[in-house]
Image 1 (tube, one colour):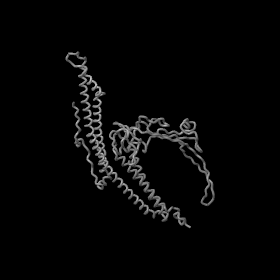
Image 2 (cartoon, helix red, strand yellow):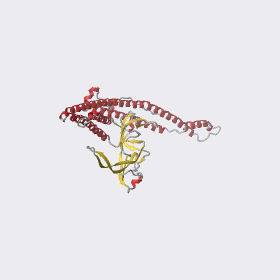
Image 3 (tube, one colour):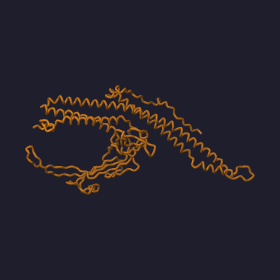
Length: 449
């Protein structure tokens, strides 16, 4: 009786009949992983780096150092940081005796050695922190992010080491060798970071922060550089893609060879499987690049709209600030004039003599006391100057952001093989913004008194 008659689906050589389907499913998973890695790599490459003071609402990429007003202290290394995670693993080993039935139906006994590591304690902590660059800071909420920290502590020891029980539990695991490995990863204070995520408005102050957002395809906090991240994703793309090709071809070839009685008859199905897989790979790549170019074009449009937003902010804000400062300055000038008049009345005028009467000043002094609690126009002028500089800096950062992403967009349209798809989407290069192209009327600031 054949095995296949029982519904197991085995070939005469013991090769499962569902092997090609399993190989195909695994190949599809590998191809999906490859395309996902390439999509993430393009997302990293397509996003220009912003300055902290130029962060706008939306997906941003920032580089800076990790800073905190109240840093954490790591558990093992006792190092100041913004987040950390630690674990203690204990090694065990044992000899296992088991019985089994051999191919002749006889019961046999054999022994085997087992060993491994078991986690006996772990923990960690994280807090919001600030990312600092040469222009300012921005708050980062690390909850929900993929974090790539650095190893700050790694030590293996026995029971004679004070660390063994000092930072580890008192109880041992079964079959313990009494060796423990203490490992800790963290983002130490002042560590250079690469952060990509979604920027949003803070709830406590008028400022932006980076936090988790389900709509954002990537939220990454890494101690690696952008080049290292992009290179790693590119390597993953090729590894997953080639692995899927091998699985697709191997599953079909092995099954065909077992059923057909030899390798030569398996060549044609293997080539067919490879062709189908490569066709799917090319189609997936075209779909990915096409969507990437469309997304990049939309981000160029978004970058231009950010300039419009900053221009509108300047148009609305600066005249109101100027008006407020001028009003305060005029008010203080009137008060100072009245005070100067009062200072000339150093003594009262005797009755019958022409001159100022101190009794006539009483109401004026009372009025000045109400109108002159604390008038200092110097602070207002400094605030106006700060807002002017901040507004122009925001506009300059928005223009720089637009030129950066437009430059990368134009490069993508000219780079092989992406340039072959530009006609399919009807994409055209985006002119850059030069200084003489920016013909918007400046907001007049006239503080002459």
